[in-house]
Image (cartoon, rainbow, N blue to C red):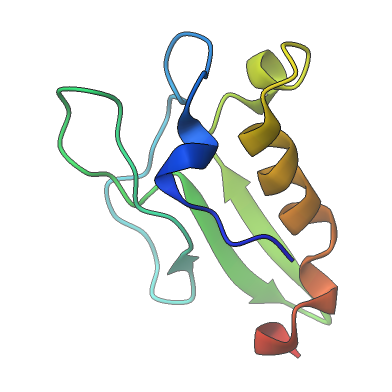
Length: 91
């Protein structure tokens, strides 16, 4: 439900995440390209693939650090993840 933009990454605690994939199976789709300051863009931080009648999501973003700090962008990403089956693009 939320379009994620660079402003959603403002105010994040420490780094945005870790364990970003460098390459992945073609069944996966990269959902976001982003980077920390002074880094090259990375698109392996949030990957989505269909699995059976649902989805498999790989999330390398440090939501565990951002959510307790009340970072709005982290909540927007989380809302998108928990409602992924409601997204008309994935029906």
